[in-house]
Image (cartoon, one colour):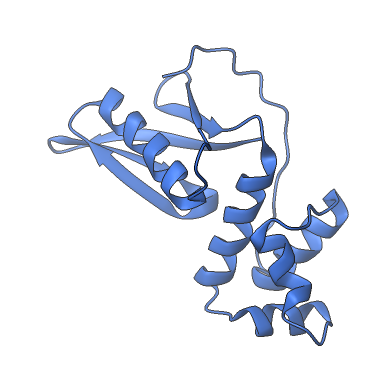
Length: 143
């Protein structure tokens, strides 16, 4: 699983953003900005041993991801919930559940949602978002 992103130069720094996470970092060079993306994702996941990979593309495009999608699903759900200003209990209520654990178990990574459930969880915390799933044809080397 990978999240798409883009880099661009602004004044004397390179900015790197991952729109789906509404997250951004920077570096003095494009290479350093991509290294910071890797560090940012690994820090967001926070699991010892988790490693993210950054795949540089054409222009300023890149993808960041991991062979293990579970931590990435986790941080996406958590980030969307936090950006919506919802508590775990409020997210669960939007799902029609009485216990905050109905949402929290996916955010903690104790359960892995099916694609249908994943979309339901995202709609609960980000109802106006439309998630596009696509194959990546990126075969560029890891940065």
